[in-house]
Length: 523
Image (cartoon, rainbow, N blue to C red; front, side, top):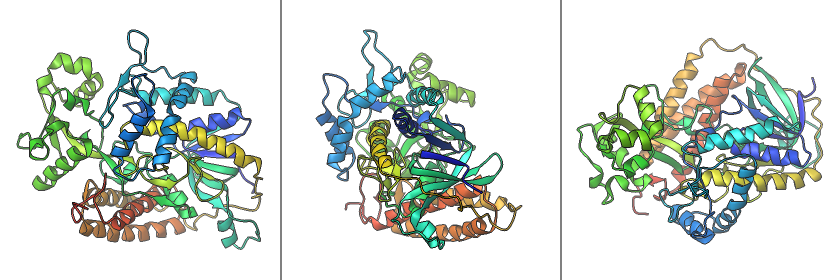
């Protein structure tokens, strides 16, 4: 059977990075297939509340933004990368405005600029507190009306097809390695189909679901990172995972962000005994930097065995809470908590991956024809710790640069004939013991949360590694013997990604940025 679909470029993922690349390539006359495992609007972009950082006011300078970013990155940012991406920021913002993103304005018509932790100037453009959703909506509208873009919802990218992999299967091939397509599971009929493409762009977002508590949506299972790793691409900086200190705690594992602005207005963190504890950790108390607050909460929880702590916002009063924080107020009230009278249960949650598939400033990986953009990629911008709201900016700028690089690559690239290439399923039908997958997923998330979260030790990391090896062995047996489905594929990717996190963490013999190891507290 021949391939199901054939495109110039396949984009895996439908967030800000993937959609931006698809639009720019289609504008140049290239055919693009967007593969997304859920609905096209379901992405990390859609959940980004804060905003996008860029220099757009006369009182700010790119050089100042650069220094803020380098300081946050704790010595591991790639300075030339930081300078180029931030320099291109204003141009990226203009592109979003042209596509219909209506950023919030002041009464005099100027763009409203917010300020967040680590920024020395007001430079956060936002659309109220639903910035990502507004950007996603505008880009999706442009994609839907472009005849050269086909969006395939409910398709799960399984494996990249490279020349080297085909050679391993005794194919008589002489050319050098490159990406020539991928296999994807059509979730609607549970069949794996073959896709041809001159190039593939990974824009699959992060991997927050490898943790028990995360602000990421259910789709964030590290699929792009795992696929790239299995294809032989270089992965780096996986130990640097940003945890948001205050996410709403519920036993349903819902993790709604409780913005740090609530503490900025006077909210107080309390332990289960009701004590305000931040003064024991930092002189700035509840307004200490995000990583300090997250580590302090983690220590309090480990010391007492508590599953959550409290955020007390009762001093702000009903009027302020409803006017300044309407989303948070409504969210909590819908869950039975009137925050003008009651404390909010909070817990830190995995939020953003600073590492990923290594790329250059053109979005190119070390495998020809394979590109990566957005949270799945590691450009060197974030270093050991991401500066707030630089992530959406990176996605926009790198999408433009990546699309331009892809266009040049396509000029000199031919489609590789894959008429004889087919996916071979396992011999057995889907196992009736799927409860094993549920248990394994739960064990993975608890292992990563207990041993590889905000504060690490060498002993915890080694314990995590041994458990991951066992989980990997079980899942590989499933993968090679049974027909694949989404739950199996996601868990396989989560285990691969988790091993990369632990492996990188074991290699770093210091505490730096988001990687804090009690065995090296002062290194």
